[in-house]
Length: 390
Ligand code: GLN
Image 1: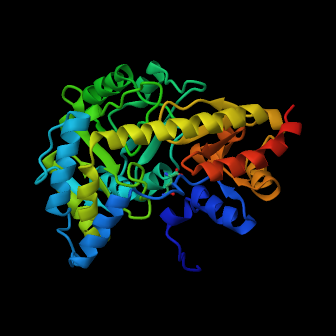
Image 2 (image 1 turned 90 degrees about the vertical axis):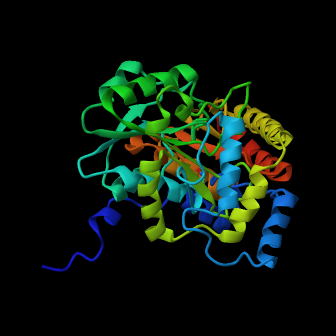
Image 3 (image 1 turned 135 degrees about the horizontal axis):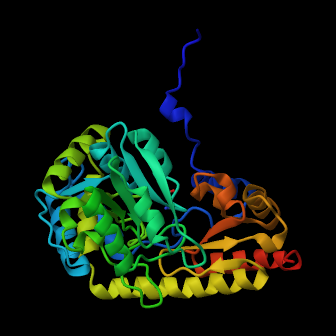
């Protein structure tokens, strides 16, 4: 028998389609509206805070679960923004991005046979996260155009084997912002079945149409069964810094800290210092962030609609899911390939957000976390599609 070199786990998933699209954008010289990272500068003062930290020799390991100053800043911000009181000594773990936060959280709580509920479409990492942690994913549909879920369908997804439910609000890729009523329905089921909520709130400040961000941990009785995940990437436009964190009750935090310690030891120490500075920026910073994103949202929606995409207008985050039916393609991958090669704009094929590729075969996702010039250049190229739309 030839030896099986590659692990069964690693064999079960492919490399990230999102990250691959960025490489294709570079290969074809396309405007990159695929992977969600800003192409504009991070705020000057947090860049200075990072350089200062390096120059003042904060260059060795921070405490494995996070520098004290940064954890204190996380607790302060969670208090004013989320209305959530957090003990920085026992309830916070700083990780290498929210990506590590999610896998560390899953590995800290999942046992063989455990099921984890995932709303679909979902951010593609959650699939491999489930495989790597050994969880069995159960999908609950978010229905377009408003991406609501069916309460009965959700209730049916819960059973004695359910360990956790993953929530991502504001949501990638749909732009859905979960309402208090929806979160309460989820919370009720978590109580009924003794389930942990793992909530990825990385887009918490990118909100439109007067939507409010609600952390499920702040609902009655949810604090002790919620792992809240966040990070610096999106709010401060520093996706390459890889600084994220979890907030969870002490017992779960101890488990997350152990997993985190042996996975990565810790996140970059000087960037945690800069992060402490970032999290203490005045509230006006967050208002401007949201209003700048609103302008970009308006801009991309108007051009996409004009050239023939059906758009699902986002209430939050910085993506637009679109329906491509008008262009005569049945296959999102083929359409994305055509866009990147012939039109010169890279997007993410819809199928990468579904467990069954067919479900996303008529969709592609655009991101709009880009400079005006980038959006203008994309606009010009996308105009070529106009003649194609039926
Ligand atoms: N969250 C971003 C996206 O969906 C990118 C994340 C990543 O590539 N690590 O595009």
